[in-house]
Image 1 (cartoon, rainbow, N blue to C red):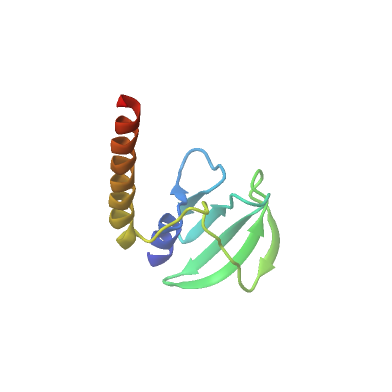
Image 2 (image 1 turned 90 degrees about the vertical axis):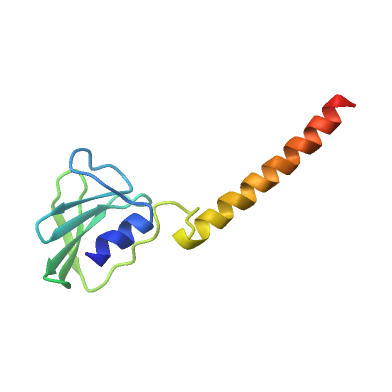
Length: 110
């Protein structure tokens, strides 16, 4: 389901045990999302590949607070980068660290 992949790409973790902040759980055609930045979550109910309902829910009880027409789900972490750029970013960081290591070693040895 593309929706679940989008949640994972936005740094949410799937869980079946501990429903803590920045996690989601799946039960049949229902996805519960525990948002990391507010004290409520969303329940998204699917019918096949289409969203049938969106609800705001209490995290502790799972009780519905309100029905919604749409909802914004922001990344679980502000430091998100597209996967296709991740390798390039990691190499840039490694190059920078290597350059600093040389500089520091020259500075320390003098």
